Length: 202
Image 1: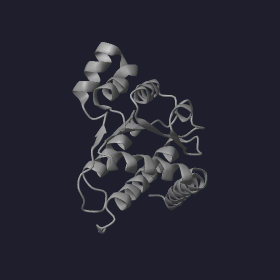
Image 2 (image 1 turned 135 degrees about the horizontal axis):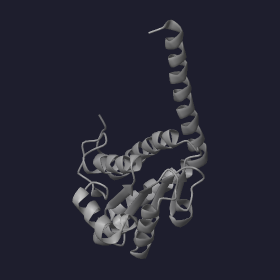
Image 3 (image 1 turned 90 degrees about the vertical axis):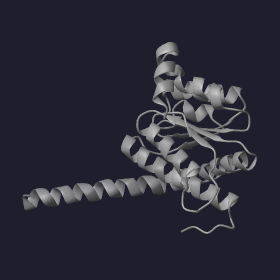
Image 4 (image 1 turned 60 degrees about the vertical axis):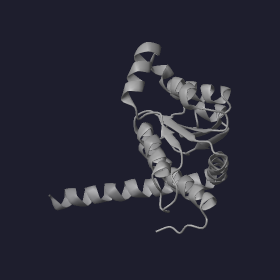
């Protein structure tokens, strides 16, 4: 690699990391209370024997599955599994519902199938304006689920229709998604600590 080109790439790496760190710091200041409130909703739901549903598109679908994997599997502590379902994971369901009812209904239909009063719905959309995510939130609220929104870009419509909006203060999708993962990990940590205080993390 040309030395000048290598130096330029290293500088770009530094810029990306510094931008990501700055976004997380800004999110801490703007959303620390909302993140704690979201954790409390999840804790109350699990403590009462209810479950968590998560959904989103693209990278946000991956984030939904990541969240549910940490809860149903484990985050850090060796503890009982927690009931968490990623509505993005079953391709047969998604394609059947998309084909029969339209893509905007894929998550709403699954909320109708799996959601019950007392459950928690975690809606993830970097723009806050994904139609299928918004329809699922509407279905969740109608069924008595608590709703949490992870978004960015000012919050979009999602921030106005969930119980607990967490709006990353950025307009850049990569920075929003990186911060959503950090938020997801903090939520899992808070849930573990509240529900299983007697168990040590490794």
